[in-house]
Length: 142
Picture: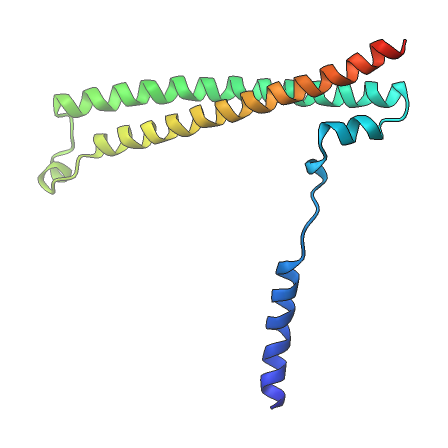
């Protein structure tokens, strides 16, 4: 009986902990942040914060665009090598085309980078619109 209770208590605790709703700091809406800003300087701080986050996102977008170009070059290079038949002999005899594998992996990475670019651009627009709201409050109060 004691052994069952010893094993049952951690399981029940884990289930209870997993059911607890977690609060996230980033889930605050723009209205909540705007209303929580009490002074003009608070609005300026929030606007600068959103603008700096947007600048970081721009740098990430540029990095991903560079990667997309690199992956496109790899796709072309490995695709051309595979068409020309530049394959190591022992792998070719086993029916394994290494260049096709690298071209496919580069294509997958390119698609992932393009998806990241889209999500970063969406976040960038959100941050800039939030900053604009705070700057508008600052302008209207002066």
